[in-house]
Image (tube, rainbow, N blue to C red):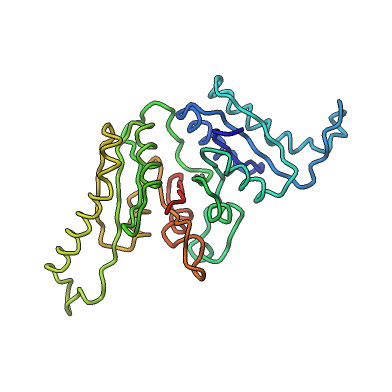
Length: 290
């Protein structure tokens, strides 16, 4: 199924939270929802097996339970149940290439562990060709299709290279929700901007103004394309990771970019995307671009 929102299910609370979020997003976008569960040991479907001997019973149960809950909230949303005889990573990467959006449950890791432990979700995020949204269980409930009071979409903008795909996704997300878009650029000050007791105010002002001008230029084309989206732009003089995570503390969605082409020895997922995926208090969309 092309042009769908796909969610990966594994029976966990995180994947069920992802399914709820994905259903709302599919409803906003007017797209069908695919509920995908991958299991390498999936047996060929027999004709009329008795439930007690159906080897696929639990795989079917995972998808059916999610479908039942979604149908109760979105009775008119087209939903397809998809069982795939494959490992989860292969199945989800394949589904991502055929979907508008892939949604996955994510387990928030502790500060000490988050940069050393990987999971299937993070590997898929680092390799997917389409946007991936990570949703954790226990986050505040996502609003329905109608506008929620005080909502906002936050996008982190690095100003290094083109980011048209990133901004297109972020502006569209804000437009669909009818909420403002908060564009955030975080920049750590170089050491030589500091005098012995405090930052040099003239140098700090010069760096801030230059960043504001570049941020405004980066946003110009998307502002013209989405004139109905109110844009708030901020330059925060702190590490980009800290800036975007802090700015998204009350957001409906945080949108972060991931460059498709990275240096050979660099991690496939940058520090900002990594930090956002593990520490943001809202769903995180990671958009490949460049």
